[in-house]
Image 1: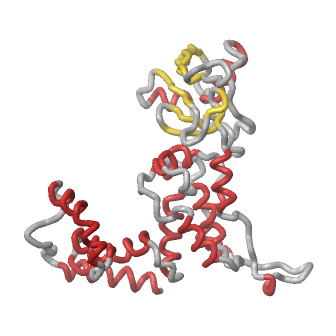
Image 2 (image 1 turned 135 degrees about the vertical axis):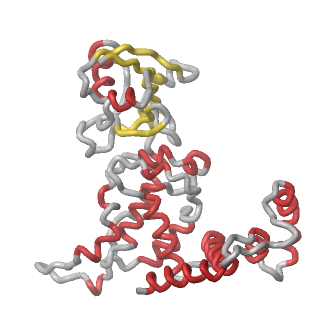
Length: 320
């Protein structure tokens, strides 16, 4: 099977800026993109630099951007990209991290965020079993973190996350998914402390682009982030703009059947906070000009009782 690789090359000591080089390949039908890169390195250009190790989607080393989406190239067949109408495969380094050489990036920001969430069990010393005894945990107790355990730290979701590209403070999907694994572990004794720290690390900064859903190991970081938010509110950690926005949003829809943007902003600022309301006035004018504020007044849906019934039903299930 013939294919064309367009690979971004960059050697800081030699190049003023990254550039793209073209390689023509003719490999077997089942060849992966990693097979193609290895063939290039073996027979066309041995200076090409990239990371790889296990070749079985276990180590997470070979993450790179293929035609705009970050993938494990050992798991991605060339044929699958060709079938999507990609006659040429453009391969670039992962985003949100500094390029060291060609397709190799500096993973330091990724590992910093990972360490920030303290990804290790912190049990209550008084409850730790004595030597030669087990701390038994049922499968049901570990069910909430089952998907989190599949993470191989490949940084695919970190690279594809739009927030990590613009906000270096945001912990990112993989770190938050790993945090979820320990927050939901019944043996851990630092749940509230962890949640409070996660708020500071950007728990409420996720923009819901859902690019992290394309996880090669099906970890589902978006669900983990949403669940962490729910758990943090239930734990009483609500003195932050994210939790307040979520609560007021829910209250508004539950009350009227649709979101009342005007009242939402006013309640978040504080109805009696005159200074804050005046400060928000210019934004309100811009929203009005863009048609974001319904006039002359907010309209309820035709049957708000039905919406309230749905809220009550969901609330009852959550309590159960």
